[in-house]
Image (cartoon, rainbow, N blue to C red; front, side, top):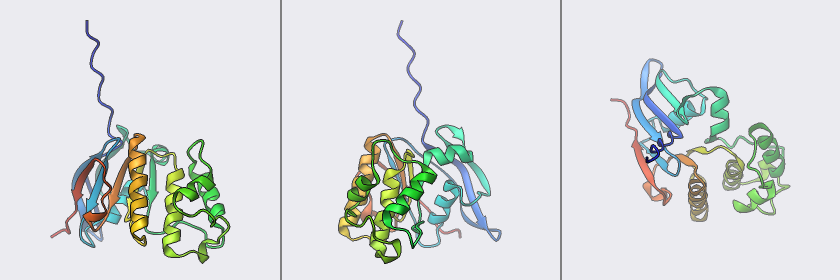
Length: 215
């Protein structure tokens, strides 16, 4: 007798009828989508379409006004979200008067880090070798974005929420983001990436979610 076929693994993230309102006006939704292991969901839309708001809802920074979010097939709760989701937002989430290395050490203390990877290795990966002792306030916008990418690279979370990760980066930096996403997906992770331009989409298995301004 043939053994029963294995059930497909649940999506890393799924949402059904998700919506958000501000001052009783709709920002987005209701929308349905999912992010499976090994794929990226590219979120596009004009300014004001709700891309950043959507990622903040998924990261737990804002409360949705309706719908359901599931993580690895289970209803999302703070402890599960903290373990599964890594968030890269517009703000660098760095203490200006700490060095780059001190910032990474502090953030890894909060969120954990991947086993077998040092902070220095992560900084070298994002092109910041030699900047370990530089204060965050002395770094350029591009360097601080790279430091945020190093923090995400160190995260053990399988799902990356990346809000405009290409902002403040030159072409080399854009290629860096794409290499990071490719490597993360090869290891079974997933990513949700907001961007204004499809030119910056990572060359990986990608689905598209287009948000439109409410009429």
